[in-house]
Length: 439
Image (tube, rainbow, N blue to C red; front, side, top):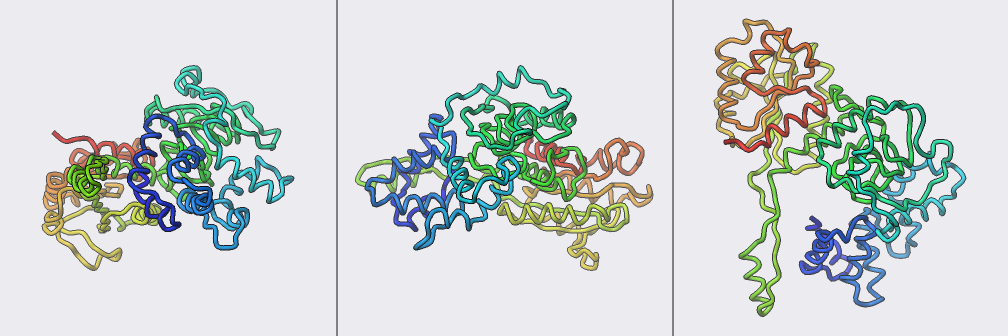
């Protein structure tokens, strides 16, 4: 975490080294940091030894954590107003702030939220207690917060949901979403803004789910980031509205591929250089390189509605997560080849695919519906060989799951390759299956 922080701060002549980073991590481990404002204060105490350092430190902090660059001659307000971060925050919060606030007042409100610290939060609520008292099937009769009053309020308490599992949060959010009919703000139950609910944005919910919005407190455990769709239907086949939720689910394929470990050789080597001062050097160790093979059925009218959004999903994945991604195509079923181009003019034979690293994550995307004769011996051999070679493999089906049993070929393929719905929740289940340690 924060591996690139020292380099960025050194650009501003702020001396942040591995020792400062370790102290920051230690403060986080001891639960001394809950908000972005806490990071500002703790890191300032670690690295700022002279009042003259405050200017460069503030510039580096705003650049690294908020992507706000303060140029020579800029006032802080000018830099904030110019930034995309502030514009996104303003758009997210305009409804609850109303039109009466001036730009300067909005900037001050933005700064209040950015620099909100644990000291400002007078009460930390146990999220598990809130959770146990709540239910997911409450009928949405009226808002639980400030719908009649758009004046923003200062957050004086925070709910800590770190004791709940991610699956518990997702399952309960689905129940709440099924009941929700209107916008909500300032409460603890609905998917909304400005409260302590475990799902929403603009509030104070540690280890909750951020749905839409730009965040700010850096407290969310998972981001389902689509501002236009509120709430997000996790069971819907992926479309323009929930593709970012699918992306958040898909991101899980990298969660178990890396972990932090003590770099013993570097610790000894650098300790000797320091004359015997041995400071632990931490490194991120990747168990295997993240490689993804996407094989898409683009040959029939039944798949036409899904091709573009699938390509959008994996293109976003390519730009946001560093990895190798190869996309191939087929029509109805895979025989002895797939194709490297969407027109299916450039064949790549299965024998060549099977020479790839077995650690590739392989996603087939298709409805698996075809005439029975198309699923011949060549096709069956290809699927079985792919399943045997690639241990992390899944089939994503855009057809509603209730229809799968009505198609013979779908049921046959499903017995060979684990099949999941092409929805955010289905993708998350596929990823969890991939991440299971094989015996």
